[in-house]
Length: 389
Image: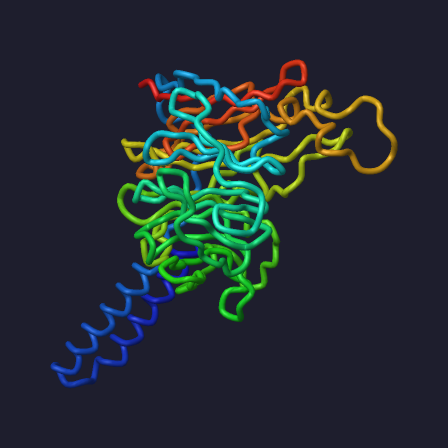
């Protein structure tokens, strides 16, 4: 609606140009028409279409089916409470970052392969690895939050280059590595401090920020801290998708950082703006988007964490007043997962399903990482899905 109003305003200006040109020389009149047409076209094309996706399911026969599942077979260290990130490299290996543990790599079969680096601040050393970026050169970028450094790790699991970060950046998405990378986060420069989306380059010793932008429909005075929490995914038509974790809003961007299309959903279970909160013993957690992936057919898979019907069982039954330690919270009981498949061309939901499992993250190929515990044993598995029409 906002885009239509702005385009209407542009057309009004174009009409004024024509009205003023009535008494002009015919050649001048034609020139004004051409200029006015160009102005109107550029203004209209610069606007991102904002469309609300209705609740009705477009394909009544379509359903999301659960496919193969592999279990990551941990080495003697075991898994921590919850991974900070899990990623898939170009060889099909699965990388897991765990707070206080480090980085471990698993084969595509789920077998443990190797630890990456060690604790420290030197070559092949990490202080607090927390996230990954899969690179097109068979390498992986490992982000270290405490040292504010990104390591380029070779397929042989050796750090071959270090790049200093400019503020907190995560997640990242390579568009044309290393010269063009989409990033979200807080960058403390005058041009970027209130802009949540950035285009950056990793070509030098320091990350270089080339552009920072806002999201469509964001008011200029918006200072919501959760605007920094955004998921990223490649768009097969070029550019990339963003998904606001705490508002059901998906936007497709050009490689140059111009918004092309925005899809907004307002279902009853996620109608308003959410927040970065896991709830408490008397209140369920609000919903959030944890991942967005475009499949080979151009359909958008959106993964959500929503409160489980048994969310109260996730909190310790006996506790003193005050804060609850993270290790005391059973996250797999707080959350379940909701999956929706959206056709961006028709702006309709194609299929949806609920998964009775806690999914902290999703791999780039659309497989979900499922976290579960059994008799104090933490288990990570990777589950695939398919859309059956």
